[in-house]
Amino acid sequence: MEIKCCTILTTFSIAKWRWSWQQLGKRYNQTDELVETIFEILGREAENADSLEGFTLCHSISGGTGSGLGSKILEQIKERYPKTILQTYSVFASPEQSSDVVVGPYNSVLALEWLVEHPDLIVVLDNQALYRLATDTMRVQTPTHAHINAMVSKIMTSLTAR
Image 1: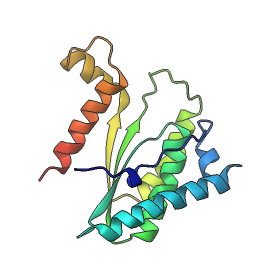
Image 2: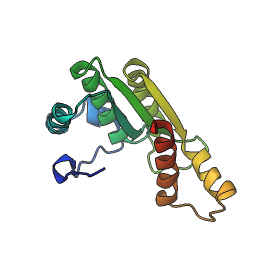
Image 3: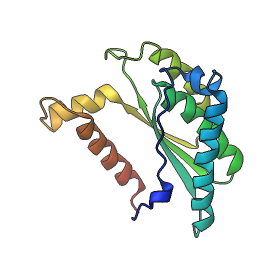
Image 4: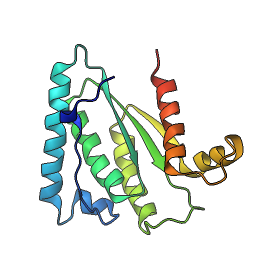
């Protein structure tokens, strides 16, 4: 699959680790602008699709962007494309893991309402279980994000392969 440069969106936005910062906070106008830019790209891709079946969102629900912006994107996809399938790969942090996101549990709880309401299918990924798989099964002494991302991509491709 070829990835076109016009479908990649990069931005530097600090959610300050808060769901509310992306959903309701001072950056609301900037978040709306970002969402509109995202949907301009999605709209172009949807128009070019021969048969649009659905969307997949990959996100963590403990950080501010994955939970807050992710929730907003889920809601907008269902509003704009109600007949498509909406699937998520949602990474859940474990209570046992230390995190630099102090408000992570709150972000997760707030994002759960959107996860229950909008997607048709949710694949729950337990961050701690992924690290255990890397160390115990793959025998990686110190798993990195690259190891975990490789496992997640294998999960995704095995679930979407025909």
